Structure formats: structure tokens, C-alpha cells
Image (cartoon, rainbow, N blue to C red):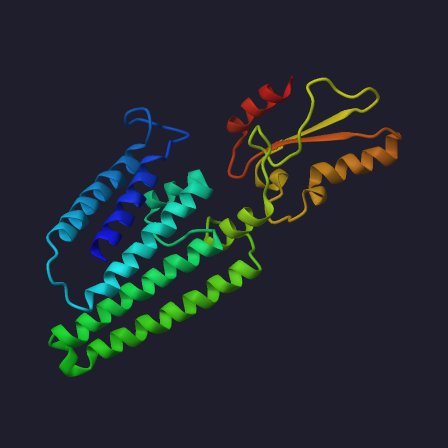
Length: 261
């Protein structure tokens, strides 16, 4: 089992290496400095884990929980990166268990549960704390927190909502409701040449124009404005949306240049 966990950790490291920074790729033209630092730590930890597996002879039964937990986490992280390439960047924020994919989230938190069991068994069986009942208290608190977290994630999976910062439920909402076109925007496909008698309306903005929190893109300000212009002018307007969350005006100027075509 230790070799399986070592393989999953190495798989997670490969997933981390696949990330490419959109801005400030100062290290080898690939990653930001903060992400490169996280990569270095990950490489060291992976090396330690592989050496641990190679030196394994007769591990105790409790360590199986640790190996299973690490294996589940590594597989879940790799699956998340395969489905959402940019998701590997969450490691730079030390977001170890924040996959927006429901299946991967289940694997992650099952892994956390296994590692928690391993820690509890070690506290109970190998430390003086067991005699005072502190170990049992710590294990109970961990179990309660784990169950609460599982309940919250189930709720976020069933009915995800957006929040002011990047959270699990925000990512889950985006994964469920946002579909991007070939240009990377939440919009349909538009021809270069406009249709005869069909004026075009261009919307460029941040999360408001992007429609964060709006499940159906037809309910966004751009599409609703185009619909009102349809009735006012008698012409069918075509709404084009080049927006992205967390963008300021300077970052939006290139979108306008792109859209001029």
C-alpha cells in the first residue's frame, strides 16, 4: 500500500508541474515565484514519501490508514487537474482539499478521514496523552469538524452558490453552470462578419457582466439589454460578451481590442 500512496503522490506532483501561470511567469517562463516555491516543497515531500515507501519492511497496521488517505488525496487532486487544468494553482494558496468536482471532493475528504483515523490511533496508542483522555478529546473534536465539513460540502454540491471570495461552493457553482467558448468567454460563438440587419451589442466587464451567480446566461445584463433593444428598435440585436471575474478597467482594454474585429 505504501507504493500505491507513493505513486499517487508522484502523480499529484506531475499534475502540479503541468500548471502554467497566466501572469508573472518569472520562473523558467512557466510559474510565478510563489508557485515555484510550493513546487519545491512538494518535490521534497514527494521524495521523502517515495524513500519511505522504498524502505518499508513491516509497517504497522495503523499506517495503512495514512497510506490509504494519501492515496485517495493524490488521485483526487490529479483527477481535478485533468478536468480543470487551472485548478492546480490552488496549491499555491495551500488549498489542499478544495476540488470543485463532486467525485474528487468525496475522495479528498475520505482521504482526510483516513488520515484523521491514523492520527487518532497514534495519539491513543503511542503518546502519554492517552492516559489523560486528551487524545480522545482531540480525536472527537476532529471527527465532529470532519462531519460538519462533509455536511457543508454536500450542501454546496447539491445547491452551489457564489461568494465574494474563491471558495469551494463558488468553484462548484462555476463548474456546474459556466461554459466557455473557444475564446475563453462565457458566450456563444460569433462570426466575424455581422449578419445583415442585425446590430451588435458588446459587453465588456468583470463579474457583473460575466454573470457570476446567474445560472442562465440569458438572464445577464447583456442579454436582457439586447432583448429590450429588440423590442424598442424592431431589429434583432446580437449580444457579445467578453467579460471575466476579478478584472479591472486596465485589464479589460485588451478585450475591447480583440472585439473590434
